[in-house]
Structure formats: C-alpha cells, structure tokens
Image (cartoon, rainbow, N blue to C red):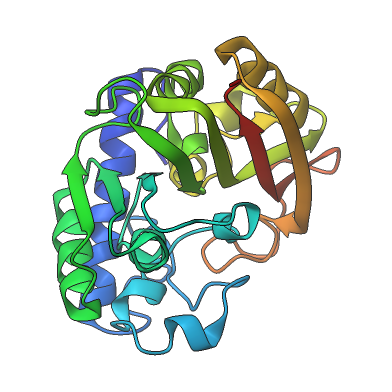
Length: 267
C-alpha cells in the first residue's frame, strides 16, 4: 500500500477511489467490492426512509458511500438553497431537491467526473429538475458568499487534507442563520499513529483523515460556527467493513465512529 504525504497525492487517490466506485456500481452490484485498488463498497444506505428512496434510480442509493443521513438534522423548506459537499451519486441532492421544490435549488459539489455523470443521470431519472451539480473541490466552493441556507455532507469532509479550509468555505457560503448538517467519521480514544495517517487505502476508506471528535468541534469553532453538536450514531466504523477485514486498523486504543454533526452560522 502506498504512503501519502502531500495533499495533492491525497486528492488524487481519493478521486481515483471514487471514480472506480462509480464505475463499479454501474457495472453491477458487488463489482467494486474488495477489488485490488481498494475501491469501496456500495450498499443501500442506513438511516434513510426506504419508501423515500424506493423510486429512485438504483445507483443513487447503491453509490452512496456515506456513514449516516445528514437530512435527519435539518427540516428543509420550499424555496431554500441547499449545498451537498462531495455529492457523489446525488442521493442527498435529489432528496433535498424534492423537499425545497418548486422554488428552491439543491446543489451538489464533487471533483470526480464519473460521480458527476452518475449524479446527473440519477437526478434526471428522479425528475429532480431543481438539482444542479458543480465540479470543484470542497476547499474552494464555486458559489458566492451568503448564497446557501443549508450545507450537507455525508462522510466526505474527512477525506480532505485541509478541513479548516472546507469549514471556512462552508461558513462563507452560508447565509446568516444558515445550518451546517453533516454525517462524518470521527476518531475516539487515542489519536491515530503517523503510519495510519499516511496510509492511502485507509485514507480513501474514511479512516486516516478523520479528525478526533474534539478537533472537529475546535475546527468548527475556529471557522465561526455556533450551536455545535456531535451525536455518535455507530460505534464500529472500520471494524468488519467489507474491504477492511475484521481487524480495527487503528489498534485497540482508538476507534473510528460515525457521527451526525450540526452547527449554525450566527444570525
């Protein structure tokens, strides 16, 4: 396995990982799981109302490599503008678009062409005409200041090598009173070792880049957010996952857990 030390190498590895995932889902169930390049495994996501996703394109939920449902954290209203950071196959964008219709807009931002193509196809099949997908990185959001009511993200911010930049950008594009509502992976216990932090496969699998729970809160505070809450929703992230075997890659004194994280930009 390769070792990572440069943000551009990290970004390239993550982009390739999820490009392979998008192709794998389109090739058929199970085709991307545990492949030689460490591609992740799509499955019907937990935390979602099955009736709500039943009529979507199958690839929308199957290519959702999330760790929770950020939509549980916020009540979307017609006319709002929503932005999903790292929108993947578009599941949260499509669901958001339906809730803010007819006058609202749901944006998805992703850096991977294969995922953007898949998301646009899924949105068209779902009839989500108010869903728009933008190419770019979450460290430099291509939207103006104060233009978004709600920021969503699902297990993506941990993949960034500069989480401070991501959170500052999220704060910038939110309107006063705007909401930050994400599902992400955080580390509890001892901090990961330097070797784990540099491991390519573990980075793309949402382990190596995850912040300590206290670090996440501190970064949100530094960005200017208030009303910060972290709710742990799953305590075995990284143990027994499809491509990681049954061994906890962090060792016995640390664990990566799924969490719902909410915050607000002051009025």
